[in-house]
Image (cartoon, rainbow, N blue to C red; front, side, top):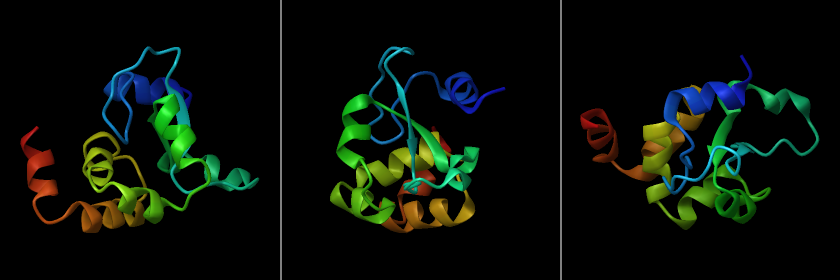
Length: 107
């Protein structure tokens, strides 16, 4: 199964960064760690669904810069992206703060 469909099946067409629900046809795929021409970053543990606005806003920004620009994005990633690589999840936990993992667990 392709990653896009797998993510849609897991969470529906919800942006991993702002939690906005958009149509399945409008949701985009985003490389959490920008690939910059490298296909090795096309792995499932580096891809999330993103609304067109968040995807355009993030563009090729480093993961940390984008999350630090608006910390609730880190909590959203923890909720919708448990499939990400462990290092990305650890960074999101650190940025979201100590209460975020407990809040996600309650959902």
